[in-house]
Length: 143
Image (tube, rainbow, N blue to C red; front, side, top):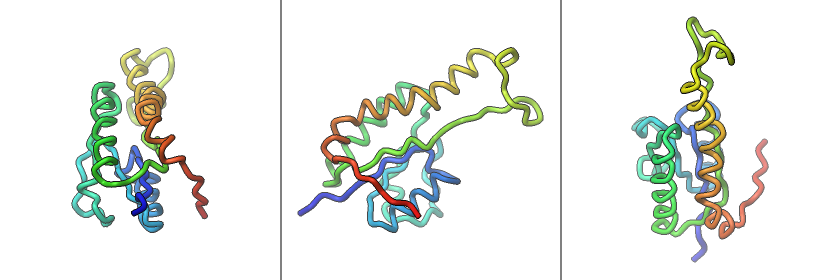
């Protein structure tokens, strides 16, 4: 029996992430979603609730736990990691939607931005490198 190709996707709860889930599900990929929110019961993809991991990418310890959980789910689901899409990102705003700037934004805010947008994808890629190599990745043409 061949193993099912699996996509691990961060930032899956809305927008581009939600559309990515639909696209890969339509191609018969298993999709393990990761987001800050719990799984929304009205989401239509198969096995959505079973293949969702609630993880706060701003917390490195949460990422380590998520990597362990992803590995376990791949093993238990007889699937291979064909793709990791680090879609999650944050862009905090100031008062009235103002953009952050280097002079007025606290270092704590910048640490959180860099943790989610830069370090979390690196931590996930490093944590799942063995599974990625085993899955041999695959280019997916998106129309």
